[in-house]
Length: 207
Image 1 (cartoon, rainbow, N blue to C red):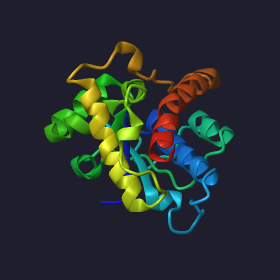
Image 2: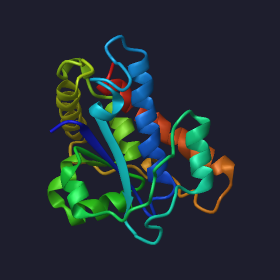
Image 3: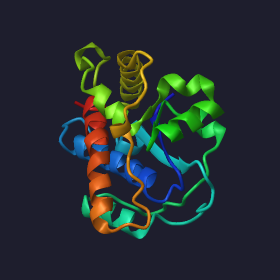
Image 4: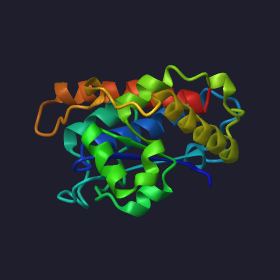
């Protein structure tokens, strides 16, 4: 049930998945700001339409803040890093997600091994963005900025992307590099790649 819930997964939950979590939320807020039927803080606000959160396959950093260069990228792009704390992935988080986006194919395999029934809604982030471009969005449910309609549209969108996948495997280029311990230039490139997938997702949910 609403809101449409997206779970982002990487290894330690301090770099890639937190950036994806917050940049997707930012993209939805920016879409709403351009729509006459979206009122920040009221019915149809971003928090009511979308729940974007994240976790890591390992728990080494549980409770930590976002890695500083990752947080810088989110802030530079207009996003918010307040209140973030790293978490280890749990099965119930997968069960509650309408869409699971992983940083790499190995992490996709990890999610599906935990919850085989989530395979149809679990994608590598780059894979999802690549396949989304081939989906006919005109065949999806209505696109009003209400929780019920965004939820229905999101669920149908995931089904359509999975149908486009046709059981195929992600490509090596779909993986996000791990920027941990590397410089701001690497974090900037990874954040750019994240936006290449989360921006079209927000646009598909709220055209």
